[in-house]
Length: 233
Image 1 (tube, rainbow, N blue to C red):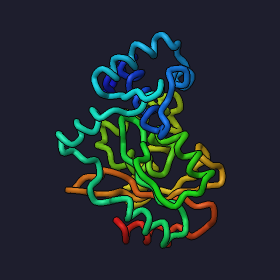
Image 2 (cartoon, helix red, strand yellow):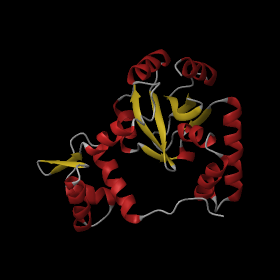
Image 3 (spheres, helix red, strand yellow):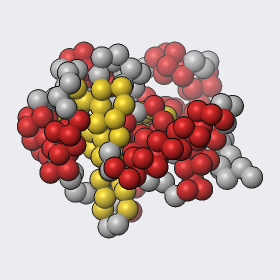
Image 4 (cartoon, helix red, strand yellow):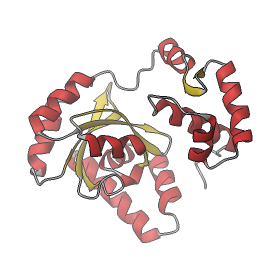
C-alpha cells in the first residue's frame, strides 16, 4: 500500500519558485527563475505574478524576492520549527569544534538547512546551492529519517530506493543503528567531496524537530564531535 501523499505539479513549481528566491539575497529575474526551474518564461511568469499579487513575492527592479506573506503565516501559526537552537549556538559550536555547524529540518522527503555558522567561502557557496537534499543523502537527513514514524520512514525509503531492495533494507538497518547510538555519520559528497558530517537529533517536547551537525574536512574524531553536539543540544 502506498502511504505517500500524491504530488501536484503546480504546487511543486510554486514551492520551487519560493525556494529559489528565498535562497537568493539579490533576488531573481524571470529569466533566472525559468533557467533554474528548466521551464518556459511564460509559464513561470503566470505563477510569479500570482505569488506577487498574494504577497508571497516582492518585485524590486525586475527582480523577485520573498515577500512578507510567508513570515506572516509563520508568526500567526506560532509554529517555529526549532526554538532551542539559535544562530549564536551554531557560532559557539563551530568555534569549539573548529569546523562548520549546521541546523537542518525536514520538509517533505528532504532535509533543508535553515542556518549554519563557521563555513568558509567554498563551503558556503556549495551549501547555498544545495540547501535541500533527499533525507538519505546527508547525515542530518538520515537522523531526521531515522526518527520518523515507521510508516513514514518506510514510505520515504520506498520512494528513494524501492527499485533497489537491498539498498532499501540497508538504509532501514542504518536508521535503526542511528536511533540506537544517537547520531549519524556520512560523507557529504553531494556538496563537497572531502567533507564528512556528524549529526544528532534536536528534541523538543518529546519529538525530533531538527538535526544538528558538524561538517569537517579532517578526521577530528567522531566521539569528540558527538560530544560537542550533545553539549549544545
